[in-house]
Image (cartoon, rainbow, N blue to C red; front, side, top):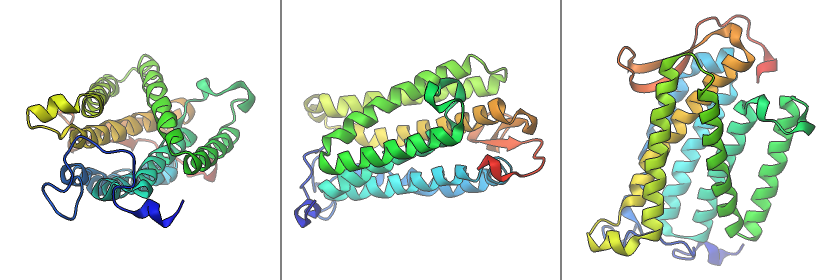
Length: 269
């Protein structure tokens, strides 16, 4: 890496939105401001999950902080289209995946050599995250392949876990999360592969919609995996999916309420 990589426009990636059209200081204006949910919602999630963080694992708050970092990194990238911005954006997403896997990856899918031990699996995730980070700094294209390879298995595991749940609220949230994820992927692919078509109808902004939909999909999937973790490994704490501000109609922001907190144990970190 060199100072040249901080230069605006040094990234080989350029999305469909025209550069410096809306603002002379921001390369992709819509793609930049569409990250606002990554900044605004995590503080509320930290508040909603305060009991979960206290009685299950405080690691849940790391995920919400990492989402803020993703949003800030993405804003910087789209505002400058610099290579450093691109790497910060992609690496922040990578570390969200690795942190989430470390916390909530269902043990039934562990590789055999981890011997059903979450501590060993967390060490494996840390080693993989550091390795992928180093490779990405060496060859930035590596990160794109790593990220593409993590989204699909995450959703496949989600589908399998949903087949096991008895709470229909959880099942319905899983269906909605999957639908939003598919819409997000549609936006990403169309913006990347069919830019000429969308530009012809004066709507080169699908990547901005990707930011909105992928945030909704990401945080709801994290909520679901947080639920699965309690159900599979700490069932005595009795997880309950609730919504803020209107719980009765499943409208608003989902979070996990712990009905039987019990004794807090450092072993759950």
